[in-house]
Length: 177
View 1 (cartoon, one colour):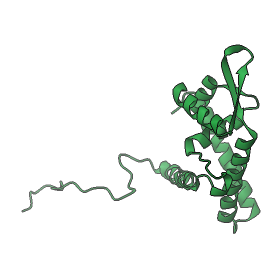
View 2 (cartoon, one colour):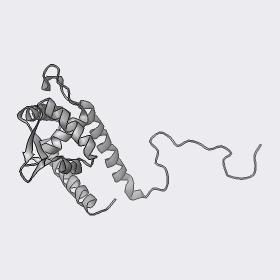
View 3 (cartoon, rainbow, N blue to C red):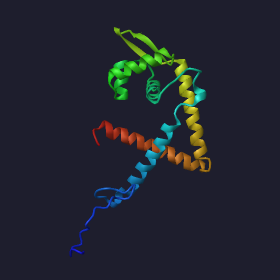
View 4 (cartoon, helix red, strand yellow):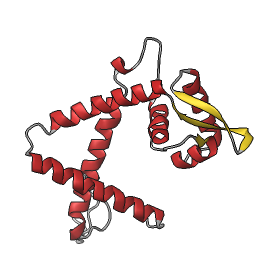
């Protein structure tokens, strides 16, 4: 029976993927970008570590791979506490993962010359081999995905994403949300 008001009598759920709350018209491209970046990130994470990159009996999970990747960006061996800061993880978590990576030969550990109680870690030659195999496999996926793109489109995408990453890192370092 009609109530005489325009208010619906039941609450409808928003459609899947619908935007909740107020939205500015200018946010459309930002929403599309965020969705596309999420899709790319999800695909890259799903790629995992190619089986051919590891020797029989070797195992490396995503978090250990991420640790190796971040550590490889450092030109010199780093203290575990600094690595924990780079990864934004608790020192105990980083210590446990570093021990596993050292035990598997993917990470080297040396005494810290400035503090005999501490150690510094770096990616071992074996760790670099694994990182290289993962990088090569991911490059192959990217090459295949963009095989029909013009070279100029590839260059433009790389430049735009590099700029976005730098701007986001700058905004993050500056305390912006």
